[in-house]
Length: 163
Image 1 (cartoon, helix red, strand yellow):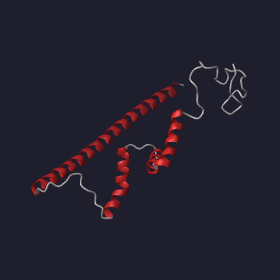
Image 2 (cartoon, helix red, strand yellow):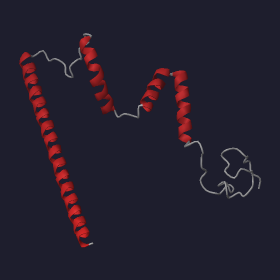
Image 3 (cartoon, helix red, strand yellow):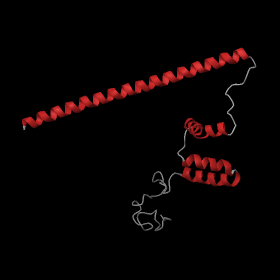
Image 4 (cartoon, helix red, strand yellow):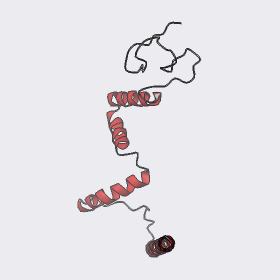
C-alpha cells in the first residue's frame, strides 16, 4: 500500500511509509483522522469571516469584534453599553425614549409613575437584602474555615507534644 505522506512537519515519523503505525496512519480503516490545525469548523469559520468582509463587511467586523472580546452574552453587552454610553446620549440631547408610550391620560400616567417608583424601591431593597445575605454566607464560610484551621492546629500541637 502506498502512502502519500511526506517528511512534512505533520508527519512525526519523518519518513513516508516508514513504520506506518508510528504516525497514526495505518490505512483507510485506522480510526478517526486527527487534524493538526484544529477542527474543520474553524476553517469554515475563517472562510465565513473572509466572505463576510467581502460581501457584508459591517456584519463581519461586528462578528470579529464580538469574537475577540470573548463572546459576551447580550445581558453583559447591554450592561457594558449602559455603563459607558448612556451618559453620552443624555449629554447630547438624545434622551432615551421611555420603554412605554404615553396613553394621554394624566391620572393613569401619575399612577404608572408611582407604581414604577414603588417597584424600583422594592428592587433596591431586595438587592440590599441579597447583598446582606451574601455577606452573612461569607461570614459563615469564614467561621467554618476558622474552626477547621483551629482543629488542625490543635491536632498538630497534640502530635508535637507526643513526639
